[in-house]
Image (tube, rainbow, N blue to C red; front, side, top):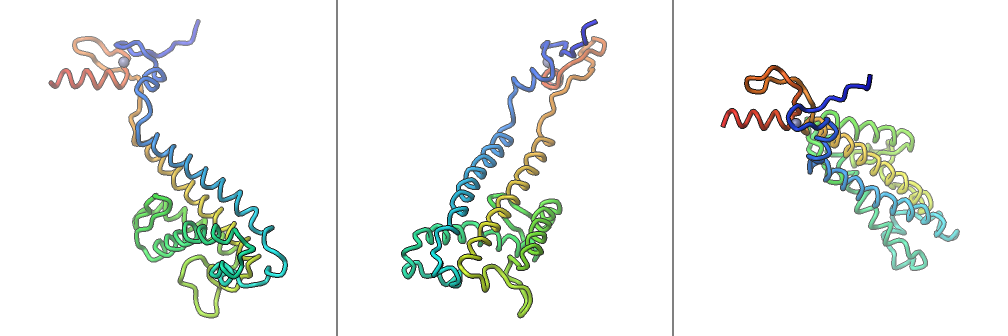
Length: 224
Ligand SMILES: [Zn+2]
């Protein structure tokens, strides 16, 4: 006997057919677009940051990172310093602010994803990733380091070390963002319409298998 395919008694469609005709909810499509855009920026950053280290000439390698990046006019040979400064402003600083805010119980935002003070699961994602990163690197990322304690940000790093650190901070930034967007997408999919076929009583009829769309139609027709 062929396996019984559950079809809607009214429109004759299977759950899959109903789902594909109704289409994905716009929120889900929008989240996919954001993930895609983020992955493009991530790939661009990975390519660029992978090259920076090899572009530093040996005589500059031990100079202070902040000093070199803050004085691009003095180090014209390192043409990529503008890109490094951009990455500091668009990746490192927003991440530091977000970490500081979450740690202080203030609303934070990273890559357009909001993390409210009561958003326990999102806060956990950011804090867990950050704490592992800080332990591994032996330095804090937010601005609340103690005197004489763990170094913060790029404190005391040479340009060579700073570029390697920046690459890692970028990886953390995109990793956190991706996890948050994926979690948001899962929430959205849970909230979104579920297209199921279940038994329902249609008018005077006995219970028949009816899809969610037809059930809604019938319900609104009856109550109208
Ligand atoms: Zn139907």
